[in-house]
Amino acid sequence: MHEVVIEQAGSAGLITLARPRALNALSLDMIRDLTAALLRWRDDDSVAIVAIRGSSRHPTDASAHLPFGCFCAGGDIRFFHQAALAGDPALEDFFTEEYRLNHLIHHYGKPLVAFMDGIVMGGGMGVAQGARLRIATERTKMAMPETGIGLFPDVGGGYFLSRCPGHVGEYLALTGLVIDGKQALAAGLADHVVPSAQLPTLWAGLADGSLADAAALARHCVDSGVRTGAAPGWPDAGVDRIFGLPDLASMLQALQASASAGDAWAAHTASVLAGRSPLMLHVTLEQLRRARAMDLAAELRMERDLVRRCFHPAHLGRRGTAVEVVEGIRALAVDKDHHPRWNPARLDAVRPEMVAPFFDSPWPAHAHPLRDLA
Image 1: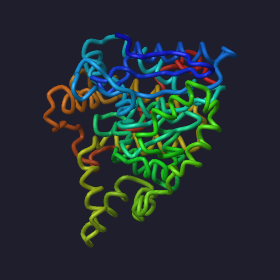
Image 2 (image 1 turned 30 degrees about the vertical axis):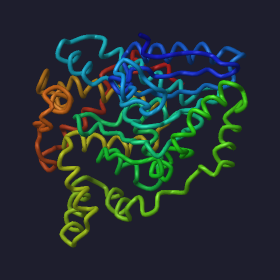
Image 3 (image 1 turned 90 degrees about the vertical axis):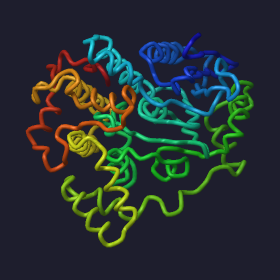
Image 4 (image 1 turned 60 degrees about the horizontal axis):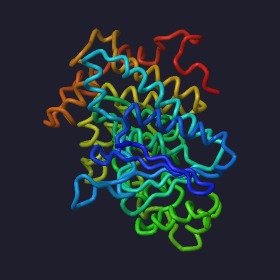
């Protein structure tokens, strides 16, 4: 069965991620299929608009799936774990080709619409955030949760999170917390929130030409009264105050002080950070701060450097199961004990010399895998 369903209806190119058993987590084959379809339609005058959705399992039939309900849960982390331990070179191909796909989507010459229903995380965010129109629903569960598996928010995460209002980007990148559709709208990570029941109508409108372009689709959302305002009371007032501080030590100290004064949000946030990889929290904060001044191509090149260092942290003298991301995936998805053994185990034990080499490219500029991104 195809994991990506690609079809054309009238002037609309329609893509359905069809790996529902894995919550539409991206495989290398899926990335290649998406890239091939987008490149083909980019130069096809018969295609005026492209739309991407996910699918979910039918509640009464494990072999069947329904459109909508889950956009994409991210990259295939079980593959990451197996490939890292086996030394499989396909792991390198995965990230290079995924980041190229992210760049293609952000710079796509035709309107691209992402129907961000259900889970939209990690690699799913990389597919959705470059879209011209990003439609969320009341079922949207959005996050960049990579610090929880010993990684950093990649797939352009440094680029789009660093451009969220204020310091919301640092907050989402470091904590990996899940937000809903209204919160995504407030964070600048969605353009509309519509009832999930309307998605089939919108999709059908693209297919039959009654919604011929992104502008018509956007007008339909507005005219139907389904666009919502920002989420009331979100983000917490502490987000900018805490996550705008210069370093993690200052953030943690401020969170603990507020928690001691009875601030429930601060106490919860400190608790969340305590479960993330201390090393990758430091790397992620540096990534976001650097990315704010970068264009997308430069940021993706930085991410390609970072992900290579994450799986091959030679400066730390680690390999195999001792690598932070391998340990994080083990705890979450392999053994499922949810108790990763981070090294170092505490934020204050992370030294600058552990962090800085992550940002040294392992390739000379002329040989970088993403050297030709414009």
